[in-house]
Length: 258
Ligand SMILES: C[S@@+](CC[C@H](N)C(=O)[O-])C[C@H]1O[C@@H](n2cnc3c(N)ncnc32)[C@H](O)[C@@H]1O
Image (cartoon, rainbow, N blue to C red; front, side, top):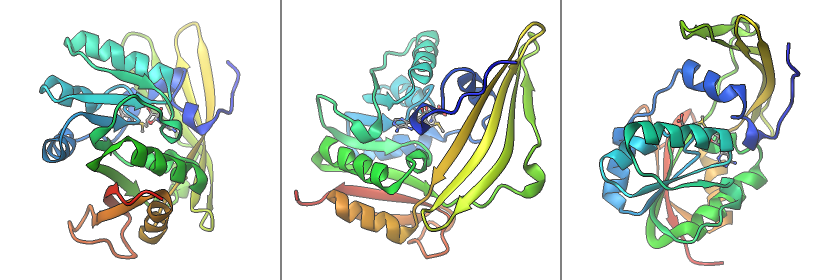
């Protein structure tokens, strides 16, 4: 067995986790929502936390000018391979969202899915919002999907999900234990990833941190970062959020400079 290594949250998707994530992920990203956003608010656009290119590459394939940013070199390498395989040109940046420092500003900036909740604390979340402020054109818009997680059901802890590619490589994911702190709005799931072949067994241990926002904590973070919240919509009802909303999407724009 390989060594288990605990890593910085921004480096979660590295090493054997990249392939395991791609093969085991349950959510597929609906390109329509992000295409509609970019078409409505303009190009160039920037996808934050683009990973291996879903939905980024679909939008590029349609001729939209969208660039991608990710903190994981391994995810970006896979994105480049996917782009090459599909004959798509794409501009990628290896940076952390909270430290974003690009040469241009964008009409549209979006996270595809609730990647914003991977930013592990309020300070990092505010730095990311400030970075979005810096990279939006004056009348630009950013789309930020958010998620308030439930605890992982007790009966799922310790239970492995796996995928065998039929070519002798099996990947496995097992959530081992979990702690939730409602004060810091943080759920930490200690997880194990494995890659098993006939001759090798690699293991990576990761703390999967979800640092969630409520509608009011998100509004506060935006206010402190110079962003105005244009709308905050419950993904389930399509109406304005309530205190009970658990999946909702913010559209934000630049407020006055402070
Ligand atoms: C859940 S994955 C989604 C990726 C992509 N939408 C996909 O499935 O193809 C989240 C991505 O965000 C990236 N990420 C996490 N923290 C980040 C940070 N602080 N700055 C930039 N990217 C980050 C991860 O490396 C990962 O690729």
